[in-house]
Length: 319
View 1 (cartoon, helix red, strand yellow):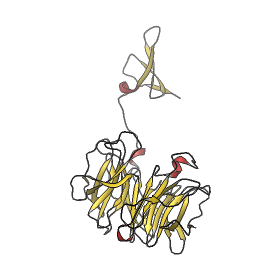
View 2 (view 1 turned 60 degrees about the vertical axis):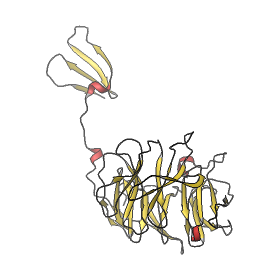
View 3 (view 1 turned 180 degrees about the horizontal axis):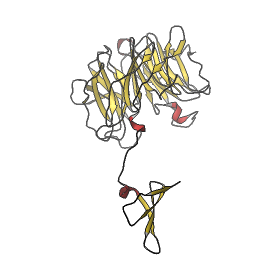
View 4 (view 1 turned 90 degrees about the horizontal axis):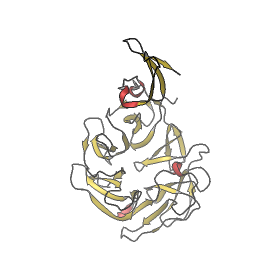
């Protein structure tokens, strides 16, 4: 069924937005024909639907480095919200009231890979840091409680790592900025999602990255998925269902029953990135050699060998 490589899903009620071909697409949670939402000159990554489903925040690279953008969830022009100039800026969610977007960024940090969480109003304004310390993502629970992830965001890029930079989760169970480690497992942990009385997250302590959950005190660990081939990547939730991608497919999980299924996506794309394009060869010239009689020229451009004569005839390519 796969016609594309689907990544970074986000869900609100019956709507799922995901990334394919570096653009954003929308499809129903039951599957069907996907609708393209963006046709941007740069990458669009990490979309997150607002709590009311009206707005769609994402990380965009239209003007170089990644920045925070927002657009109507049904489609329309996107508006740039941040101008930080950092090499890593990633949208991670929304504040519970839906008025501000949460993102992580290396801006103003002394070292690469040391991200801080910020909020920015979705109508525009100055970014403000959250009092969490270094963190890559956050999810809010009842009464101001929160859980954050540190060190890693995607376990599949650091499979079964067990060193000092292992992904870790910290919880503030009462919303009083009293952070403590959520749970200790012999593996990488990332992507926490707080739903009702449980905290869901991805862990590879049993080999392949799958979704687990526990209570806010770290007790009652439970495994919800059983992928044995591809890691669970980038889960997201609207508080009811969890969507994620594994391999090239989108999946939806009902955490109350542990029932999961593939979202069958029909992607009818013109595939613009696969169309032929013409470049100026002088910008990609590797080497050249002139014939001893000066009648022709051999050269390599973009990893290919060519010959051409001193006349307006066709250029020949080899290999």
